[in-house]
Image 1: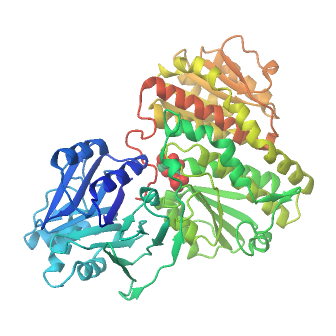
Image 2: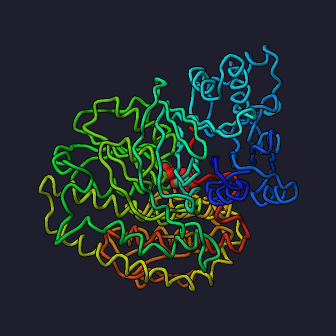
Image 3: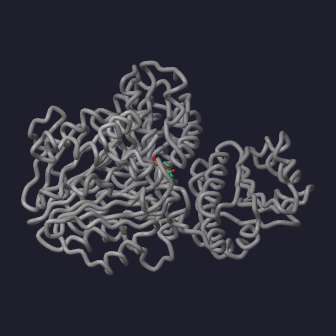
Length: 608
Ligand code: G6P
């Protein structure tokens, strides 16, 4: 999704802005642009495509300035093009970059057109530049114009703006779209993602909804919703600069797959002790709160919802709690069942997914027992707004297709399962067994990573197909769904997942030699039933790729069998995720796709 970086410095700002844009590339985008003050004028450069093209343009035009704004755009209103790229400008005076969606843009656009403003782009963002220009006619500063503007805008926005007549200052505004201010020595910055400022500062102020701010190289002023000068708490965030390098890996996704043993250790660190989960790991008083939970409601999107689907099995089997699950984008519109014994859980690696946040905010207005966030981003809106929180501590994830954030979400959700069971005194021996298994999980994950060479062997067989089917039963069905999602996201092969028992109710019609079928088949109560389902595939010529640990139970004269490491059954969904991630990665590599930034997708989906 879109990314903003802005800086007011005492040194040349161009390279700094470009570097920040490179750091935000992982979010997914289609065009980029910069506006900066240059000796009484504003240099305005935009390109369709990647940041390196913008950098080339900067190198050939060589604008020199100290104060500027820059943006990567992920198209919502209007196709990807240079004219739709940010910054947008009005009368060569006001230049803006914007993340979010202005919901009343058509009304505002009509008003502005009547006043004589010409719109060059198809975006909702351009009106912000014109409206600021309009307010500058009656206000003596961009800051005041921005304060007037925010009363007119409906929707979500993070805005950075500059006024050609005021070369020292930048003005910012935030509502429901992330924006942080970074504090430096004789320089100050703003960004929608702290990672963009990774090598520039560790000192941050997080803007709140309704805030407007003015920054120069030596001053930061923040005004609250009521336009009163305010202070926001200074946070020290060590945005791991290493996260922005791939090391020896070919892609961030590959690096993140191999980081999983360490990431899981971090999720567990300080949360388990002896034979149980520690008390209050979800925040002060959380253990008492969990004792009151009678029901669970999960909201999330994409991969995070798959983690929730696995957890629903655990909540029921280990904590004895019924769970309702919803796509965050659907939940608010279905008149959800709500009662005061229900815990609402929002899962999101970014903590900024618009639908998940909207669901959380909706829930906070209702009579739930409490809200609890599982999140990987400490500075995110979700981390700040949920009543209780567990950070997954996986480290920054850059690849659009989530890997280590998924498995650490699963670990966090298992900790929640154990905490819920502990709070109501359920299953003490089982809890002890799972804690032991969690301790050895990083090693098991390392073993599963060694399957890479086997997978590389047969990946070409899948890479030349157009479709794939993933099968799993029970607790492995969500893992099959996640495997199919990974494959389609990064290799663009159409992939679907089914609980294997459903095969004969439709998908069997699709099976022939052209249909690879990936099955998750560990030894468990459904293994034999799954084996029969696989026979149905074999009988119709489908090519089987089976991940399991009981080969003798399957008659696999044809197809591939990948022997998985042994692991406590309740944690196998986490372990079996690993080879499926590697499979998608290797297939995508063969197909030559843009693995870290697959077409049309974004890392952090900040629009509904
Ligand atoms: C996007 C990403 C997915 C992610 C989903 C939810 O679609 O590409 O990888 O699973 O958003 O994101 P969240 O940050 O809420 O976990």
